[in-house]
Length: 204
Image (cartoon, rainbow, N blue to C red):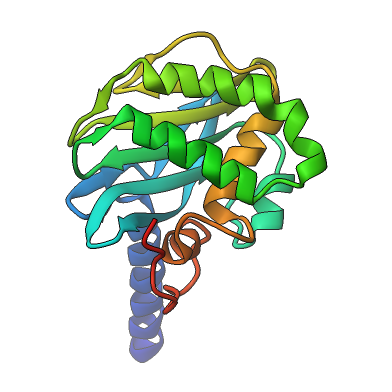
């Protein structure tokens, strides 16, 4: 009986330890991602994290928050409810570079026939980003989807401008990170909680 109790205690300790690990903040390049966040009145789980590498430097760490954990792009895009993509800056960059990357990533991962319908919403988001002039080391960018209102762009917890009403713009933005032609294959793997890809990160 004593041996059985010991085995049960060890099993319980292992399970409890794993649960605590999932609820602890995740550290990525010195940046802390909360295990849960509130978006549109709902609690979201940290699905995965990764780092955007551009040539020889690291631009930002990213975390994807969803209602439930999944590991494919199709599942992420099909999942109903609020979502959050959080970027934590690892270096200072001109906002114009973000705008260029935003449009390039969306164009690469959206069918040509679908692009015209996104132009207005993408430009609205681009204008909000460009208005920052510069994003600085330590800044936290949140891109939140509220299904009832659209996509909100926030900097350090403060909303910047009106929400982009077309939810398709948020989906297009996500595809730039986790689609067939993502910004960074290792970042995609991290956000989808897959083993880290061995594919070298693209230079641009």
